[in-house]
Amino acid sequence: MAENENIRVKKVKQHQTMDEKLNTLRAGVLGSNDGILTVVGVLFSVAAATTNQFTIFIAGLADLLACAFSMASGEYASVSTQKDTEKAAVAKEAALLKTNYADQQAAVRHFYEERGVTTATAEAIAEDLMNKDALGTVVNVKDDIQLGHYMNPWDAAFSSLFAAAIGGTFPLVAMTIFPAATQWPATIVAVLLSVTLTGYLSAKLGHGLVKTAIIRNVVVGIITMFIHYYVGQFF
Image (cartoon, rainbow, N blue to C red):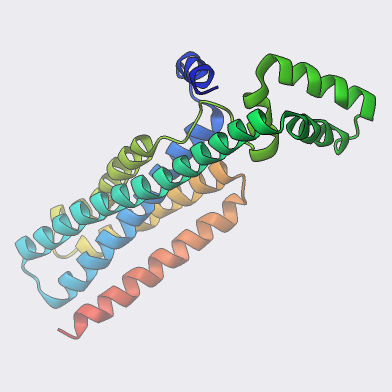
């Protein structure tokens, strides 16, 4: 059974499923949003406490790097756990196929019966699918897993790493390259525009409400800047 699964994995690794692609994009969107907000938070706190541009830049850069690697490691750990869970589910179903094939086929039949297919037709479908690919059919029906298509923790980690770094670059560049007289409004505009973009993308990827996601991101961005600015004022 394991040998058959390995053969199937080699065949399907030529392309990614939509779920795999969306998972990588999701990690990127979350990483970019986190990069924007954490970097601007540090920048506002430090800039409110000192006018030394080099100090502001180093603080922002250090936070950008820390945030990027933190997001990457978090995504790697999270998706690795998901992948391990998926593999464990596949191993469990493979064992059940060896010890209780009839119940596994009955589960497939029941799956189609719940969707309005007659018992006779559902039985025929289940028997045909099980004869062609028993393990692939069972894990798809019972666990919603497509055999051989496990979430890739490295894809999620690198997506989050680069997205967080790019996201954090917007407020860092705005705060450090603009003159002192305009660096604050320039950074605010850069943050609001970038969180608007991440809100839009997150809504599209999650099939949510675009307007709600954008408003939520903008409000969180404003609150983040406000809080960190006044934290810096204490020092």
